[in-house]
Image (cartoon, rainbow, N blue to C red; front, side):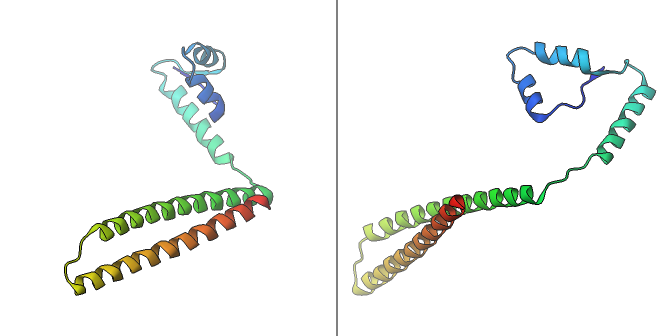
Length: 144
């Protein structure tokens, strides 16, 4: 069995997305570690070597990198929050249209319907304000 080591994610994606496996096969044949079939000791040595390499390997991220990563994460969270608010507004508008379409027979029913319409409109207004604030914060953080 041949095992390919030290391959980056981008390189692996490139090799596996080829229409044929020719480039991957060539790389495995030229750079792969060969362990004969049935060689349990060789396989155990390889596994031990890989474990020690993984334990030695660690990642250091500079403060600038951490700041950029945090900024990207915050932007993603804001975008998902923005999408959630937009979906909620759409749902409320649909509910508002349904409530307005209902016919109320008595005065009490009309008052109840008006109160419900007002409550939904207030929720839409609040969510719209939140959406505007999020968009403003996103545009400010994007321009900084």
